[in-house]
Picture 1: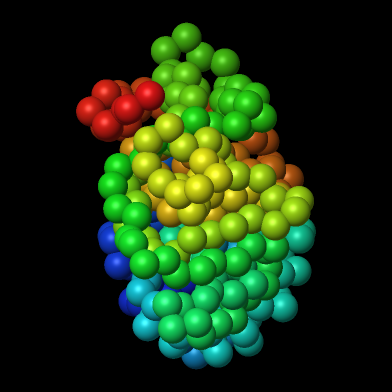
Picture 2: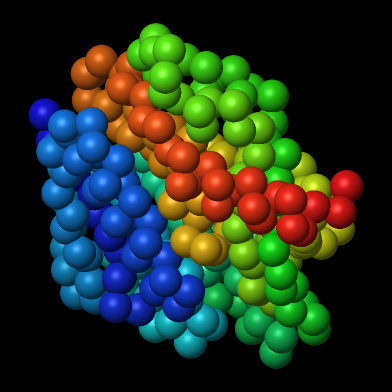
Length: 261
């Protein structure tokens, strides 16, 4: 079995090292004996999203988002169809914003998004910068309990009820009806610094402002992406647990150092 990962615009949307998310997925697949292939999708490339299992869309500046708008429009319809059929997507910061209806700049210019999700982003005067700790929604924790095969030694990441990362954005993102956040902000700003929520989930689409990159310090999120991709392919979804000592140590170090609640 093979998991095909589409990395969209790796040359333009890698502002904060979000390529590390792709490397984390490759490593966690390899450690479980799963074959994984990365296909880089750049400007002018016409991808077949029907062949993709996981799509990674990283973060970039307002300039990169403007450059990508026209190219993304040509891919939007096929990507939308794949999303509705359960394609797994992880979108970070600028990539997260691009999934929405529009991004309104500080000059009140609206940069159209892909329109895949009912959300929009408005630039603020103050950048929201710092470490973030997010309490996962309860249904997340329930889902985590179903993705691992029984094991006495592994799946320590199963006990993690939080996500951690680093945010650096001026955009304030607001979710529309029918969308759920990834969780509640315990430390940091999150989507907009007002409603107390961070990220979004729609079907198998995950959007977030968390850099770091996010997956190495949140192995449980990486495993959810892999499990969902396998399920969509009609394959067994019970993952062999990994020890994750280093990953959990990094996760807990951030929680212990920056928790303010």
